[in-house]
Amino acid sequence: MWQVLIVEDDPQTREFFAASVARSAELALAASMGSVAQACDWLGRAGNAVDVLLVDLGLPDGSGLDVIRFARQRHPQCEPLVISMFGDEDHVLASIEAGALGYIHKDSTPENVADAVVQMKLGASPISPMIARRVLAKYLTLRATPAAAAAAPATFPIPPASMPLSAKELQVLELIARGYSYAETARLQNVSVHTVRSHIKSLYGKLAVHSKNEAVFEAARLGLLSSYAAPARH
Image (tube, rainbow, N blue to C red; front, side):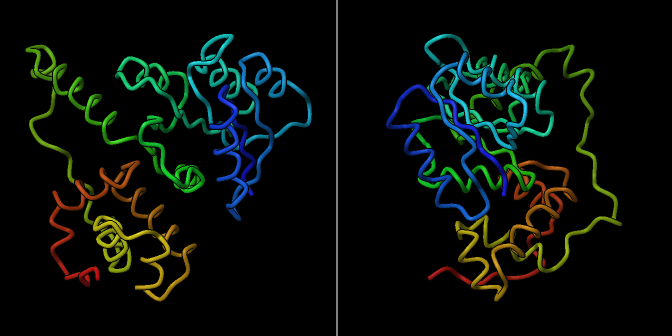
């Protein structure tokens, strides 16, 4: 089980996150608190272990970025996931530079926070669509400058033919892309949810991506999703 530390100053939100973690068979709540000082004190204590840091940026005594940096320093295996009201690209990029592997805006917090945490531990980088669009827009703006355009490659690199997706991985990706949950996909494929997650982790690695949207885009660009027809959703 992965140990989760929650750092959120709003008591109701903190309880919501904790309840979601408690419902997951793959996660365990290590501790929860509401300030930078409390979090750093807990992280600095010998014997405390943490695999996931679920953290807000706007804390009463400082920034969640400080908690991310401290956690990554003391617990290198810890993977931080930011859930914050700040949705601008500057906060997102600063979080990524500090070591965050995912960024979810509080206005679009998933009902099952634990699922986002598990996806991240399996290799994904959860990010709210609104935030992803803003970051992408800034990236495209930077690439549009003459210097960046001159340095940019003319085409995207094609993965080697020795790394194709398996038929099962393609089927799982198609179903997930159509909006099926992991549980629904497992039922349609007559496999366990664990097997579905293993396929997701494997195809992320083969496509060199970190999220569902990136995987769908890359697979579609390579023409991989047109090789079979997935069942229609009822």
